[in-house]
Image 1: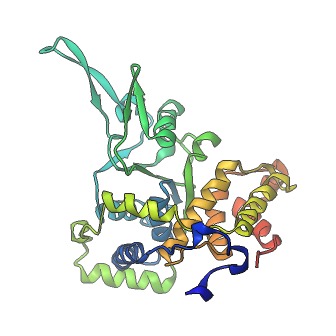
Image 2: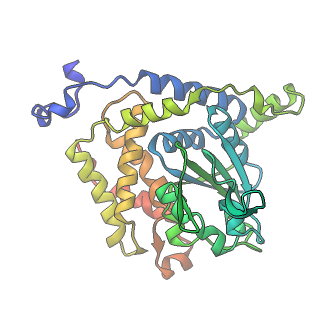
Image 3: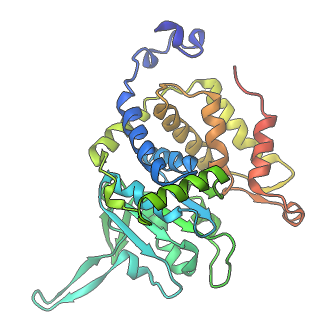
Length: 336
C-alpha cells in the first residue's frame, strides 16, 4: 500500500521502487530455521540471526568465544539445515596449505599429475580454531574467500555456490596461536562475539539436554533450504531498496571510524558495502523491502569491530573496539 512506502516524497520518481518485492518465502524459510535452531541452541539467538544474514549476503563469518558456548555446534546445525555440502577443517600448527586446498597427485595409469581437491571444495566450510595454523595456511584462504576460486599450478578452479566460510577462534588462549592479519579479518563479513547465556537460558539448556537423554541429535534437523533457494533469495535481497539518506548514514558511520581520535586505522570502503548488503538481508528477513536506520544500527557493529585498530593509548586503557563503534554510532544523527 502507498502509505507504507518509506520517504514517499523522495521516491515518487524512482521507478525501480514501484514494484514491491515478495519476501514471504525468505521470511518463512529463515524463521523456520531460527525456530528449530533456537530450540536446540539456547540463548544464542543473535548468532543464529547473523549467520543467516551472512548466508543471504554471501559473506563469511568469524565466531569468537570461549570454549563451550556452542560456536561449532551452531555452525554445524546451520549447515545441516541447508541441502548443500559441508566440510569441517580443524586448523593445527602443522597444517599445510595443500592440506586444505588440495595437491597434485601422480596417477600411474595416465602417467600424469592430477589435482586432488582438498576440503575447501565444499559449500559450507567450518574452520575450527582458525588462529591455530601459521600464516602460510591462513594465507591460503585469501583468494578463495574473496574470489570464490582456487588457483593451483596455474589452473583456476571455481567454487560451487553457495560458498561460505564459518571460522571459530578462542579469544583467551593465546599459546600456540597465530593472530589473524588485518587483511584476513577484512575478508569476514561479520565477527560474532559469543558470550555466556543468561541464567534462565542456561537452565532451559540443561532441561532440554536432560530430556534428550544427554544427546544432541544433529540429524534430527531437517533440510529446510536448498542451494537454488539461496540463489533466488540473494537475488531478492539485492532488490531491497536503500534510500539515499540511509546510504549517506552508512557513509557517515564508516567515515567516523577514519577520523575518531581513538582509532588508529579506520574501516575501508569494503566495510561500507558490507553494511549495505547485510542491512538489505536483515530487512528482507524481517519482511521489509527497504532498509531502515534500525537495520543499519543492528548490522554496523558486527561489520566494523574487527576492521578497526585502536590507538596504542586506547588499547593500554583497556578500551574495546565495540565500545568505540557503539559510541560513534550513537553520535551520528539518525535519518528521518
